[in-house]
Image (cartoon, rainbow, N blue to C red; front, side):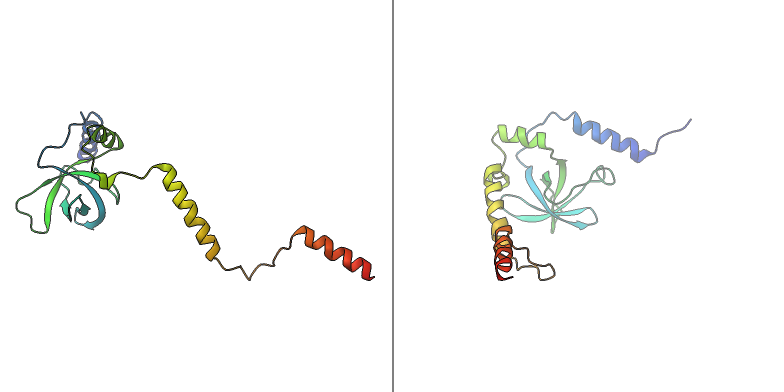
Length: 159
């Protein structure tokens, strides 16, 4: 009988657990944190509303779940940690974020700007950026068609 690789079945069960999540709200000891960077050895630097510190990824998530910069986590403090102050309890999905926002427990620090404000600020940044660009000297400068017509008229009159 052929058995599947243990890590594949573990990953399958973790994914199933994550999909069937009841979106339980964090306990009093748990905190919502955003990943700032990965430090290696299953350590991640995170920021909460108050501070920045390292968290560890528990064995059950290793090699089956990945987090990247900007992801949100639910972390629980650990007592024995000096530099590593917490352990990851849950990797939050957009559905978790919606539920936490509805329950009014999502930190204001992590709330995104409205889309219109982002687009407006991005357009301002783009126009500033274009103004700062120097002309490309490797390409010939294209003149307007009206300038060319005037030049042709003056050259034909001179002949």
